[in-house]
Image (cartoon, rainbow, N blue to C red; front, side, top):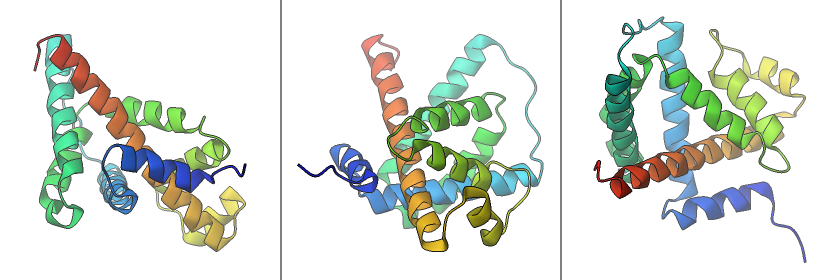
Length: 176
């Protein structure tokens, strides 16, 4: 039996959650682009808060992310911008992004390159040209774009699955 290629497996994960993989890709790309732009612009972080306040922040942002994922991408741009702005203001957001990227780095066979692509494309404090990205990832142009699309789609569905699992835990505990 032939093994499914990585993108088909990622697309299947999206479809299981009732998402079009192209929408997951588009939303992830928009959110990451806004995130990088805001980080480069040096958005100030809020001061330290209590564990209880942090828990409430996480719940609020998680619910907003889950809601945005269910909206048509083209109709939710203002909410996406507000979400990124809110996410950037919390101290723990970089750790959550890193956690999800670390999870996808284990996705066979291309997880390690997906991680590298996302980190170089969106998590730097500077922009890299396409040529610099191709060279740094040791990929040709078409392969780079295909893998970046897969990486962004996988990031989006992995983040969705993580957020949805946390939400279900809160419901089971009667928090929601």
